[in-house]
Image (cartoon, rainbow, N blue to C red; front, side, top):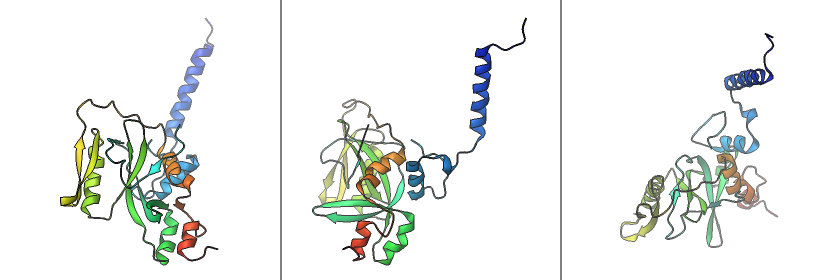
Length: 219
């Protein structure tokens, strides 16, 4: 009987050795793709973290609130914290993410950067939005909105204004009214790029048009 291993057995052993080697190698920032590396740099809830972020669509809307009177679910694992500034463009308030290296330059021209927690929601029809919640506000509107975001991790809900108490109320959908949410198959860094960088809403240098406008340097 020949002692030579069968080709199939040799292939299996080689794959097992490669898998064992890959598991023992630490994940470094150099191994990340550009989206994940940029996203990890901007996150304020995981300072100094090195490694891959936890885990179609060509754009993601960033909005102050969910669509009015629309039910939604909240992604249970997407809660990154980043610096944001708001800019009013016509009737709309737009959110701009801020590179950590631009926090001091912005403060130098009187622009405050506020840490926000980002929540990703989806509607029954598949509409995806990012809802930023300020981490530095004790406003009841903000606080109760975040309560609604967290409630949406467990069930379908919608929010509506309780003006008498200057807050939001949460209305849950009847049990089994909607199917389980379907989330986009995108890594957090890609979601961030579609929501901010691809729209020009990442202030990452003094040459950004909005920074130049605020600094009265635009031509």
